[in-house]
Length: 347
Image (tube, rainbow, N blue to C red; front, side, top):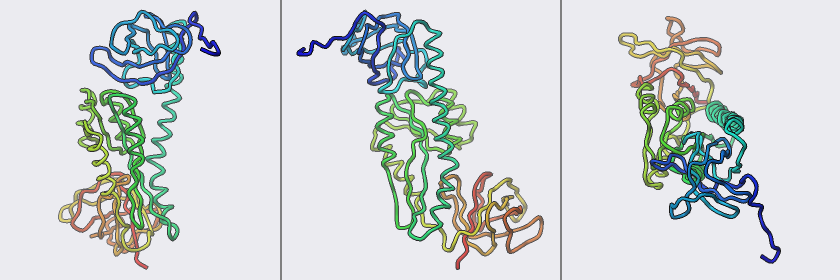
């Protein structure tokens, strides 16, 4: 009042998104604060990677507004991009001339967001094992692991709060450390694309106060249990379950020094031998007498001894990098294609 500061109401509206969520019968809604201009029913707008045409404006009591001027908070209804492209808190809201302009802007921003998400997924899937090997290379350096998580919730505020809490989980002992890493978070029901992201990243998929659509459930069935959505209504239950998973991953390495790794390429069921894993030795060597550990992403599936080690059809004591071999394990057969076999030799 002292400075007589005023905003121009006679221009296209511009403001900020405060919060976004999904409401039955309305779809995606966003609480917005108009900073300049006036937002009216029928205006075309974009915010971040989302766009739409204003179908309704609601005040804090849910009553309809015809327009929202400077310094006016309002619930904006009419987002065209759906729950999987809901605006984020802090996104700039801008009225644009037409739907074509809004669509072009949102698609360009969505492409940038997708590239960032893909980069994070690659880091989660490719960087974890490299960091693990690096951590074994020096004295006093802890073996670090990352536990990928995909988060879906009923509001962007909930997604951000859960992401912050999950990434603050840090479980460690004298030799190992495991942290949760949220590779993707979004608003609304779990979709087929969410299941696909979780499958690619080997992630733990959690749904907070939301469900799954039919396509997502069909995709889970198609993947035969490789991805399973966990549903929660209480934050502490979700955090406790993830922390329990971190504790299960946290485990000292087998006795000895890491001398080689092999990747499972094919599986064979051979009579009395049972399940045999056809592997390619990637680094170092594999010895029959060594301690072995089988990893699926960052999860430990088995730790123990080999029962057989073969090259072609001949039993051997050692297979070096660059060669293929057949492995079977003592009292364990739950191996899968893509698993990593680590070989440790006592010195």
